[in-house]
Image (tube, rainbow over all chains, first blue to last red; front, side, top):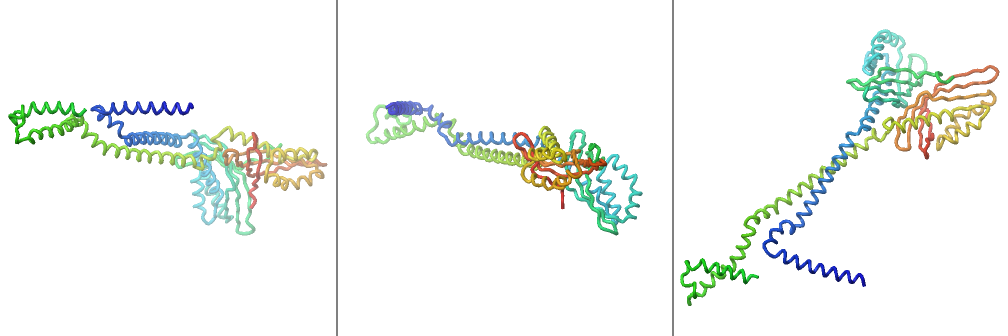
Length: 206
Length: 235
């Protein structure tokens, strides 16, 4: 019953609305109003434009946030430092006596600061030793991780698990695994090793 | 409705026409019934155009032009803005999906130090063995290990377990250095450098130190991290 009533009421109101509308539109006023209301496609198009503008604005904001994310640039610096650190450590443990100069050049290119100075100073002596021993060293990075990263100061600490194979002219190749700790410094040419050493053994064991 | 306007217009016409058709003002001439009707027809047609002109003279030409250009402009705008939106979202999500961003090692300082601390503790507990209390080692294994790591640990400590009672072995493992290689949600991989001191508490006490390095896969269960796999870099 209630439903019926409401339906009759609604039809009644719609009927009156309809008549009032027809009386309103008839006449000169109606023609001027039609440009706004008689074009639903125009309204729909406007709504679509507004929606598209909203979506574009939102998307733009999302993109801006994604590209100006501090954590993201930090993560990128971390990965860059690790990649450079692993490559540098590998370079520093790879040396072929037949390509001595090339190898030692790559050592110097991988380093900076004190470590580079030491290498440059000791280069001649070291080259002589390797030329006499006629050894070939190849290194493989087993695993590496960044232990600390100061993006602003441009310093990073890395730890690398390395397997070095040293082949002498006589005898079996010697395989040695080493635990290396390195410090990287950011230069204009990217991250470079400024310190490298074996992780000490037995220092905390006692 | 039309009749009143009709009349008004007719009157207007009649007021202006006499100069053109004299005599038609009072009574139309006999032979020219059409002459009288013609202005009337013209008048009946004129009001419509007249009123239409009144309202549309200013506006009609513009909407007709707008009706062509405005939807086209709106359409182009929608397509353009839609394309911008699609590009922006795609680019934002591809930026977010970069592998560097998936890895929260060091970027999430809290989680990084949490997993480091917890796994260092776990490694120390799991790889320490005292011949006097072998149960402690078993307890450590059951609290800190899960999955593949359980069997790996059993294999690794098999020799120690066998020799410990005879040699009165005390194996102590201390993590000296640890780094998080990868951290994503509840999975992590760490590189561990550890020192192992092996003490024989027999007649002559003797301690040997060994350097160990291995990687650990960790999973988060509840609010703690467990060792799921141990990678000793064997060839």
